[in-house]
Length: 319
Image (tube, rainbow, N blue to C red):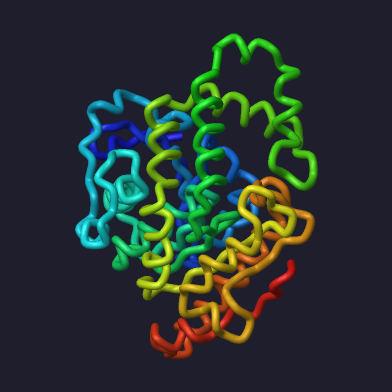
C-alpha cells in the first residue's frame, strides 16, 4: 500500500512488479467501493501483467483534504463540453492521467467497474498516448430515462445522507451486502467491506460523483466519448445484472467500431450480477487474458490500429 499526492490530494494505490510480458493493467473501482475488490483478479493476473489498483479521490483511503484538490479537466474533455465539477467523470479522468504520469506508466489497459468504467472511457479519450485499450465491467448507458434516473439519484442521496458511524459496530449488517446487486451470494468479507466503504466514503465525493455522472447531458455525452476512441474498447456485462442490464451495455458498446466486428465487443457473463470482479473473477480473468493476447498477436503481426479496431478477439460472448 503506497501513497501519491495527485493534484493536491493523497491517493493510496498498490502496484505489482513489472512482468516480462510488459503489459500493464490499471483497475478503477465503482461508486462507494474501493480498490480491494480487484484483489481476486490481481492474484490471477499479476504473474502476466503489472497491476495497478488505487482508491478514487474521496473513496477508500484516498481521503485527505479534498478542498486542496486542484481540479484538472483535460482539454479534450473541455472540447466535448464536459462538466467542470471536481467530481465529474472528466475530473476523475484528470486524476488518473496525472497518476499514470506520476508513476511513469504508458500503454496501459484500463479495467473499470460501473462508474469506474465511465472514468476509464474518459481517460482513454483524454490520454491516448498512455492508454492502449479499455475493458469495462458492468458499465454501459447512454440512454437517459428521466424518471428512473430521478429515482436513482434520490435513492443515492438517501444512502449517502444516512450513514451513522455506529453501523460498523454491528458485524451482522455485512450479511445483506453479500446479496445486494449480485446474482450469487458473496463471501462475507465482501459484504462487510461494502458496508465499510459505504461508511468511509467522503460525503461530497459520494454525492458529487453520483449526481455529476447521471445528468442528462453527461449520460448523452458518454456515447460520444466511446465513438471517439481510437483504442480497442470491450464491455463485460453480467447476464443477471439488474443495475446495468445487458441491453444498456450493448447500447453503449454499439458506438464503438468493434461492435460491428465478427464477435462484437460485448461479452456476457452467465449467472453474474453487478459485481463481476468478485462474483466470477476466474471468468473475468480468462477473458482479460484472451483480449490482451489477441491484441498483442495483432500488433506483432504488423496490423495497424485501424485494422485492430475491426478485428475481434477470439473469445466467447457468453462466458
